[in-house]
Length: 130
Image (cartoon, rainbow, N blue to C red; front, side, top):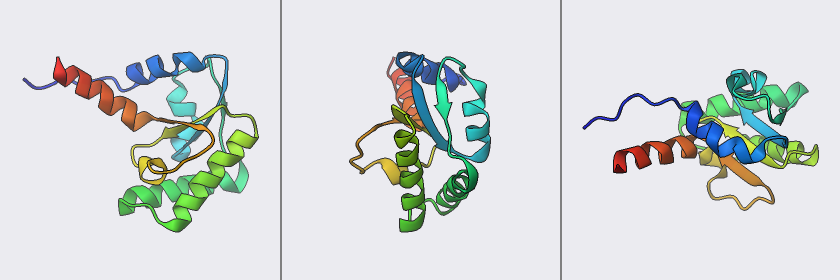
C-alpha cells in the first residue's frame, strides 16, 4: 500500500531533541539558513555562516544540487564553512539540504554531521517496513 504524505519536520525534531540547549551549525540554502530550518525549533542555538561565506554556501549548494554531484570547489567551500562553524562553537553541523550528502558522505571529519535527508529517508523506510 502507498505511504501517506509525511511531515519531514517530525522525525528531524525527534532527532534534534538530544541537541536542545546546545549550539549547532547549519548549512544549506539561504532560505534554510536564514530561517534556521524554517524556524522549526528555538531550543537550539543555531550558528550559520556569515558575510560572504553565507552566500558562498548557498551558491555552492545550488551548484551541487543542479549538477547532481560534488566538485572540488563546492566541497571545499561547504566543508570549510562547516569547520568555521565548529571553530565558533558548533557541536555538530546540520546538513539542511537533500544533496549535501554528496559532499559529506565519505568524509572523516572531527565533528558530527546531522543529515536531514538521511533522517527523512530512515523515517520513510521504517514506515514502509511496518
